Length: 230
Ligand SMILES: C[S@@+](CC[C@H](N)C(=O)[O-])C[C@H]1O[C@@H](n2cnc3c(N)ncnc32)[C@H](O)[C@@H]1O
Image (cartoon, rainbow, N blue to C red):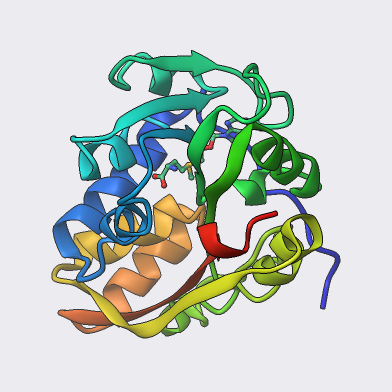
């Protein structure tokens, strides 16, 4: 396997790429990752969502006190208050503040996710819950002929081990199923553009693949559960 690399950060210059991806998931996915995360946080009074973007998790838990943290101002401006601009590696809160800390599809932006996980652990109250969700390297295998996905620093295949390095123990909730259906050629093209495939390759895939196209989604959520947090 090639050396894992951090996924480049383009949210300030191109926030619409992320927005298009969110819309595609929203419109065509049969898995609601955010509802799944929210279900793990039922007992949490105060939650910090690290890499919150525009508040997709916040929407899934309207009855919770949630603070959004993100580096990207174009996103943070649209996140409901309270929200804070900060780096996941230097969380500007005191030790033992939160009942839950989440990092959904964001740790792969860090060269080494461990310092951010240590920060999450620091601001969690004893007994709090950490949830780190991410995508598998082999996600969306239907597009294997059109895209190569280099290994990232926080793929679902290694994520539980990495969280374990910091938290000592984890529970894993993984998925691997045809959870998304792309109904049109345009949605196939957009799905690939969101994943930084060239316009040429995205158009080629849209031309060659039949619709509706069922897409296999693979990923995992590593949870440090209340019961075992030290
Ligand atoms: C792929 S988006 C995921 C957003 C949201 N959690 C979701 O699941 O849709 C990654 C987010 O992490 C943020 N981010 C990336 N690196 C960060 C860092 N070091 N500190 C804080 N936020 C970061 C980005 O600005 C972006 O909003």
